[in-house]
Length: 137
Image (tube, rainbow, N blue to C red):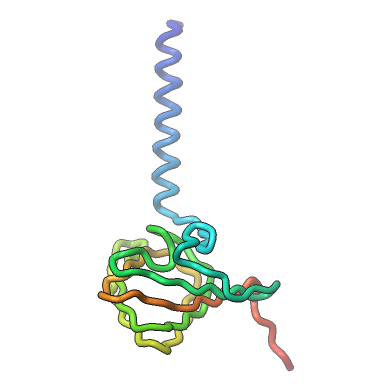
């Protein structure tokens, strides 16, 4: 076998494998530790073995709650300011959501892209549960 032909096939195989891996990774976002990835936007305000509370700040026309397409565990959000965001779901569907200061809402684990499309800085608390809450009885 021609040695240069063998090297070309191997390079082609490596490039093809890298391309497939890139496609798979772009299709499913990996969970991000927002406080580590965006320390300028996130601050851990409380943490123990069961719960972590993050405060985040987002300027207009910037990402909200993560960088690009990202994932969250199930969490509770408390809006500290009014907000208007554009959410892009994994299937490409876009939703414009508006929240008022004081709104509280639950989100199951999710993957999305979120952008602050309002004209003001927005702030919120995200409460993440490290384990499922237990019932008292």
